[in-house]
Structures are given as structure tokens and as C-alpha cells.
Amino acid sequence: MSETNAEPGPSTVKEIRITTHGKIKTWVAFALEHFKNHEAAPLVLHTLPASKGKAPTVDDQAGVQDDAPQGHPPGEKDNVARPKTNGLHPTMSTIPRLISVVEIIKREYLKTLDPTLARQGSLSGLHQYNEIGSLEGEGLLEGSGNDEQDRQEALLQALSGRNHLKQKRTAFMRVTLCRKEAPDLVRRGATYQQPAVRKLTKSTRARLKKKQNKAERAQAGVSV
Image 1: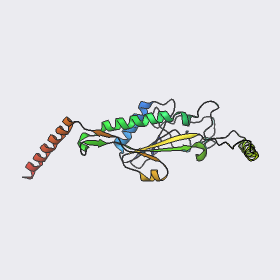
Image 2: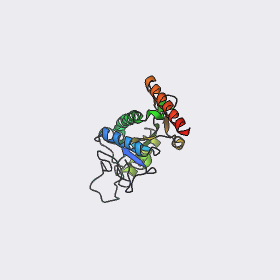
Image 3: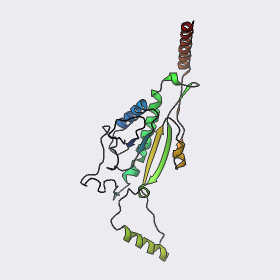
Image 4: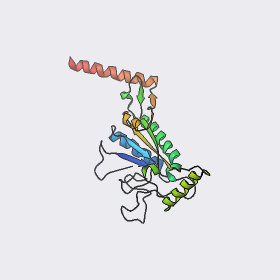
């Protein structure tokens, strides 16, 4: 998660970067603690690569950067992802894990809500906004070193009519969770998922009503 050197507060942007080796329980615990202390602040979870240009991401220990590129001087290509030679790029292969973590956070968050805050016998969870992008579009993917030559060859093939010009994209996913709706995210292209709802049992509603009636009688007695 993105953390700054300053003490985290309601306006501090928090991010969790999902990796193949991180512990899900650590991410979930961090998210629940975040919403407990800063309920109004959104939380962003993503599969983007590590970047030294940003604050550390949350891994197994909060505030410790994971997967940070090694062997490069500060500010030299450290914010650029490198394509994998085999299989899916990590920003794509970790998307299913990101979705799983988000679903766990939403479910566990509902469990933490105080039943006394329920309106009409139910509790509302977290709003979810999903964004899909490409590393190429964000300027985060390092090429092979022959980008200009590759583009010229592909263009010549397309102009000759023998082949269609192929465009490769490396996808990533970003999910924003928040207590309040964020219409600005929808306007920039995010898809929206409504909060899950936790319905209170009949016995719980009866206990809450009894507790409320008792509090009202006590308040009336004080007023007299």
C-alpha cells in the first residue's frame, strides 16, 4: 500500500499492491484497520509494478516495499516494468488474486460493522470501482531495446498487405474500495459495484429495538 513518510490520516492515499508472494491475511488485516481508523478515506488495491517514484507498498509488513527492483541507481528505470519471457506478466497473473483479496475484504468488513448502526434492519458494505488498463498506456513497460526497428518492420508488413499490424498490451487491474460513492471514478472509466448488504437476524433486530426503547425511557426519566 502506498504510504508517505507523514503519519497516515484521513486524507492520506493508501494503496495495496497485490503480488504472487504476499500474504492475503496481511493485506486483509491492513485494509480492515484502515477503514476502522479512516472510514472516509478510500483504499486502492492494484497489480501495478513496484515503483521507487512512489511510496512503499504494503507487503507482509506494513510500510515495507516488496518486489523493489535491485541493482539500479535511484531514479534509473526503477519505475519501469520488464516483460516476462514466458507466461503471463505478473500484472496480469495476479489479477485473480486481487479479485479474491477484494472479496475477502468486503466480506470481513461487513462483519466488523456495529449492528446498532443498521438502517431498516441491514448494514451496507464498501463501494467498489474497477479499472483495467495497460502498462504500455501508462508508460510503465520497458521494451526490448529495438522498439523503433520493430515498429518499422511491423509497419512495412502492414503496408504490404501480408500481415495485420499486431498490437500487444500488458493488462493490469486497479480496484478502489470506499465507504462513500465516488462518481469521479466512473467518469474516468471505472465500472461500479454496489456494496454488499448484511441483513440482521430477527433476534438481533429485536434486541436492538429493546435496547433502543430502554435508552429512550432512560432519557425520558432524565428529562423529567
